[in-house]
Each structure stands twice: as structure tokens, then as C-alpha cells.
Length: 198
View 1 (tube, rainbow, N blue to C red):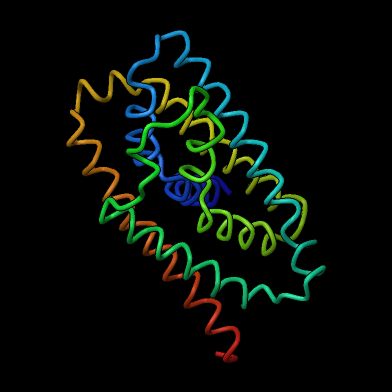
View 2: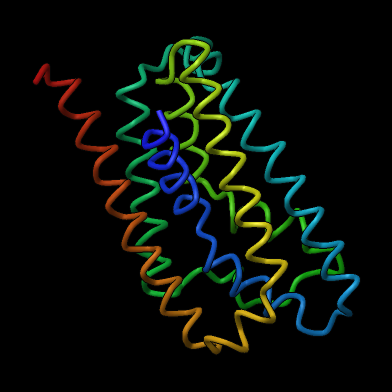
């Protein structure tokens, strides 16, 4: 049970692209005061929590409503997630470096930087394939732990930047992109195997 929680936690944490989010957060809040940054981190954590919980619990309803099979969605979501991972590795997400409005907590940091299209698809799949009360509680607990960890990472962003430098954060962001691409590939492979009956 504990190892399953840790495994899901790590998967969710990587899907939330924490180091890419940190790089974007540091860029978009570079001219803000410490107290304002703390407020932004709190709003980001709340916005991401609400978003991912809705995705986890509404996923199966959406599939039933639109007549989409879980495996078809796995392939689609995995493909989008893979494209997002490639962009992360290549550093081509424009929203990460472009200056935002005064309030950047929900848009663009929460959505689409932390919870982007690929992450949305992956969380919908994970939520829909988790059946039973205990597994659902375990999955939601792991997801919330990942969200809180991401919030803590952003809250300690200035310290991490001093310790690693902006270049170090960029390297970690690209490594996260590689792990995300592996998760995306696994989602696609699982969907194809199930659709082909293997």
C-alpha cells in the first residue's frame, strides 16, 4: 500500500512539471514583493487542487457522456502529453518566459503551465481507471501530496534558485520533461495494447 502511494505520488508530481513551473514562477514574479509571492503560491495551490480534484472525479462521467473509451482517451491524452514533454525538453513553451498580467496565479501558472492539456488528459485517465473506494482514496491522497509538494517547491523558489542557479533549474525542468515523455509513451502503449486485444 505504501509503495503504491509513493509510486502514484511520484508519477503525479512529475506530471505537474514542478521544475518547469518553478522556472516560470520565478520569471513571472521576479518584480513582486515576498508577501505577494507567498499569496500567489497560495492561490496557485488552491487553483491546482480544485482543478485536479474535478478531473479525477469527473473523468468517467465525461467518458460516458461522450461515448469515449478509456483506451481511446489513453492514446489521445498520451499523444498530447508526449508533445508537451518534447516542448518542455526543447524549452519552447512560450508562456513560461512571456511576462504575464498582474495576477499570474491561475493563468498562466496554474493553467496551462502546471495543469496543461497533457496533464489534464493523464489525470483524467488515472482517475477513470481507479476503481473502488480504497484505491480512489489512495490515488487522491497521492495527487494532493504532489500538489502540496509543488506548492512548497514554489514557496522555496528563491532559495532553490540561489542554491542551483537558473541554469540548474532549467536542467531539472528538462529532465522532468524526459520522465513525462516516458509516462506519455507508457499511457499510449497501454491504450494500444488494450485496443488491439494484447
